[in-house]
Length: 232
Ligand SMILES: Nc1ncnc2c1ncn2[C@@H]1O[C@H](COP(=O)(O)OP(=O)(O)O)[C@@H](O)[C@H]1O
Ligand SMILES: [Mg+2]
Image 1: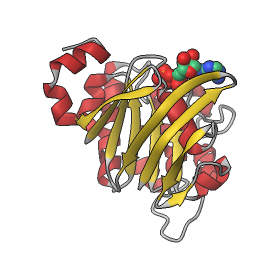
Image 2: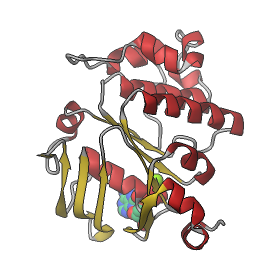
Image 3: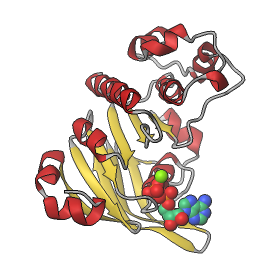
Image 4: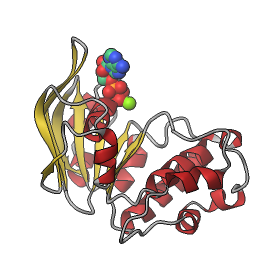
């Protein structure tokens, strides 16, 4: 479904990604792991069109998307939930969801479906986005992305800064999202959380992919866990 081929990405003169290639198959959940500053967010921003690659190409469902505008890539069915949760703090939960709606022919998502997945949001429907807790804002941010009826969603460190109980709830919700048949690319530093969810893993180091395997194989590889993630 998604294929990133040998891309370089730069911020001005500073190169942040070096010859990065990854792919995500239909309905697959793929993890992008690595410490702070290795280039996870840069890769997601490049895929959605915010940072076009200086070299290489990106394909989605066989079509080249690198070089296209962000809204066109979103229209193709890719949703992106940035690390800095994008919601409107002066709109209610319900209005936040309503304005994100993008009707498609086989539109699977509706406000009610989002409330079924994220039950806490239903009780908060009249509350302003700015008055939600961090966990509720994350759910709303993902809910807004789902309202565009994507076939593929990219989540950038969704559990960052959240309390353990909320993290657990979010893991269950992302698992249910996965079961709905959507492709997921999940950037995470929270390894224990990520490993419960992912099918396959890419590990990043200094702007490059340094390791790739199934989630199961990574969990058995103490050397890699220790070297790149500082655990094991
Ligand atoms: N807006 C920016 N301008 C210049 N350099 C940036 C910018 N954003 C990120 N970088 C640099 O790019 C590298 C990768 O950052 P990032 O993709 O945010 O990493 P991660 O998401 O893995 O923490 C880092 O060296 C960071 O300093
Ligand atoms: Mg990041």
